[in-house]
Amino acid sequence: MLLWFCFVATLAGVSGQSVVAFSKGLVAHAHLTKGEIVTYNKDITNINAIFTSDGKFQVQIPGIYSFHFYSLSRSDAEIWLEFYKNEDYLVSIYAYTASDWADAGNTVILELQAGDTIYVKAADDYDNSLYGAAGEIYTTFTGELLFSEASGSVNPVAFSAGLTHNMSLPNGGPVLFDKVLTNAGNGYDASSGDFVAPADGTYMIHYNSLSELGREMFLDLYLNDQYINSAYGEADHTWADAGNSAILVLKQGDRLRIRSRAGENVVVYGGPDEIYCTFSGVMLSSQNTETSGPNANEIQAFSAVLTQNQNNGGSTTKVVWDKVYSNKGGNFNATTGIFTAKVAGVYVFNYHGLAQQDEEVWMELYHNYMYVNSLYGHAPHGWAGGSNSAALKLAVGDTVYIDMKSHNTKIYGRADEIYASFSGYLLAPMGGTSIVG
Ligand SMILES: *[C@@H]1O[C@H](CO)[C@@H](O)[C@H](O)[C@H]1NC(C)=O
Ligand SMILES: *[C@@H]1O[C@H](CO)[C@@H](O)[C@H](O)[C@H]1NC(C)=O
Image (tube, rainbow, N blue to C red):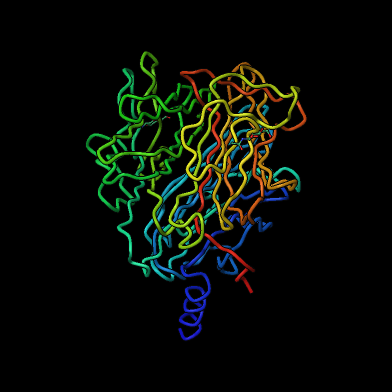
């Protein structure tokens, strides 16, 4: 206990606020058959994150945390992973594509106490074949402390909800995420499926879903009556997973909703112990800004998307995003697709993509010239996508961008069918030398 108090005091003293963020990746294939905890063998980023010897993230600082986990199956193999808090099951991911690789992921935002453990495990007695290689990191686990309870200076707004049953959504109806995991600020209403912003601000939003067996999953994120982006999945004889995210500047009273695409016969899958469909969000606050200097109290956050196809082989291998939803702090250059940090600190990035029909989407996240991780999607005759995320510690001037793997990447996009997106925000300023010992 004494050690724990010293630890917290040190963190608070040096940085002015507590910083906890990690991204782990799998750099060797893993075959899990007995419900094992996934042990990620590469630390992409680790700022004050403590893991137990059996691979569980152990909370030291009480507060609101966000977690993202993604995986790609090996060819013709399945992944079925479950996300736990202590002994409690929370959400799952599933992926399988016959004779191909398949991607799945999820995001959860939780209010946690010191001593809580968080981990990703294989479903019991189930063959899991996760893809991993040094330059091909698809299987990742990222977590970040959004608000520490101790600072107490803000009223946090954060929500996370999941769907515990199958749901048929034939007419553009809203997904009614019925299991509310977090609702700080009471913005989410399970009876309507709506999140209504309790205050003006910049919000990070995530959603993920799984189709019913052999059915179509085609969901749209709406801000009031404005279409933002979509997630799509459908495959013969299997369930299809997809998600998306966005960072949007909202006014108090603005409504966010996940609904099915009008005119499509959408059926999504869920059960009490099989929650794949989730909807989460958080309002960035003064805790996520620098307290002094030229960027004092300014949120640093951007979100950009593709409204048209983009193929590798043009003048650049970087994805050049053609529509920008937010660019607080002006770090993102839409002409080049490159994010350049104006504030030193820990940032969190999320990206998603869908391939054109029967083509591949293969995207890589870069920090300066260093490879971070990837997404991959391909479905014979169909459309398939992928997603990934990472927490990264950036110095002023560091760049972050999405590269198309030097390969036949063909990304799908339309003005009213936006699947490819790239978002990032400053989690915590962190100037000077690292405080990690
Ligand atoms: C949900 O769909 C699955 C098939 O994907 C089915 O096995 C299950 O019985 C359905 N659940 C309910 C409650 O209808
Ligand atoms: C974006 O990058 C282009 C190409 O390097 C440059 O000409 C332009 O000035 C940049 N825009 C901003 C706002 O910095």
